[in-house]
Length: 485
Image (cartoon, rainbow, N blue to C red):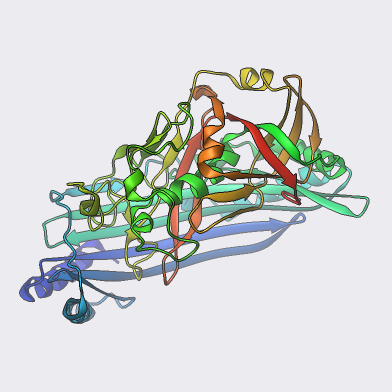
């Protein structure tokens, strides 16, 4: 759909909202395209491209929200949906016990375009399928490999946001990802090793720079080594965690607890709520002085760096944890005033045109330290080095957790020795982060993102990136598990 028609739709909807006496309203028009190419065992298993478009309208009337949406993008439908949103808001206002007051935000007029060298949707399917087939064939050259898979994914969102406050924001956002894995068998046991490119907002150059074919022999040989590896005895170990693994640990034990709607008790779905209640801000020791967690929705390429959120608030950078002390939340215009903030930090996002924007985790990252990876390892007499994602679980308040991984190596006298398997560690969030006594320098920093972060009712999938360098944690409880197999 062309931008002029979208402008007409937005104008019709906002005029209807203004005439209703509502104090605020906005419309989001969205056209999304997603392509996934997947291979299994040296064949192309599926090629799928989907397109979805529609618009959603929010209305704030006498301190209460109304929302309505439609997939029919026509000049007749826009005022009808606006009227429905107004009607819902009025009904909500008649029952509301507390009035919503939005934090101030200046009007913005801007266009945000993801920087890219190669448009992923312009790359021929033959080129993509050839890469996947060659990668899987390389994996299967390793004796002991019995299964393989590989995939490429790309998404494009064209969006227009217009509000009654005068904001008009256009978006052309890309995201790209690729991965492959190898599965080995030995003595009736299976084990897999994965290679995952991060989901990032850039072009197909992310895939070309990943060098799948160069990485395939290593991944395959490590799958074979992993399936033959011994288990480790449960007990207390020092852990050195890689950036990909830390991305999930941060997401679950740092990201979700810092969502202010959870801390206020407004959000309790998908293991909601938070132990980081508002009385803890500025005083609670979340981790050691080595732990500095920064929310950065401005870093180019990261998933939440969209220029503006779905409140029309400009993306920002702020501290979540500084020198180990919890200091900040992820907020939107509705909840920011609840803790005395005069402005939202810009973390309100919806996963589609038909979803209501909600507070989402920002791009939260662990700030680099001064050490090298070798230096972190050198000071470990008995420990485990962990790479990648595995199984995990965490309680409703994000307090007690356990995490596995994709690959594990024993550390003995400061050196990685041999692979081990079935490692799962258990911790309590502030105790675990309090045991962090070293973070590697910026040269080790990597970024990994998520596009399936579940929250809300009905459920939505949030997108965000978590960056980190390797980090060391002392005396962590390792229990028997089946992670990463």
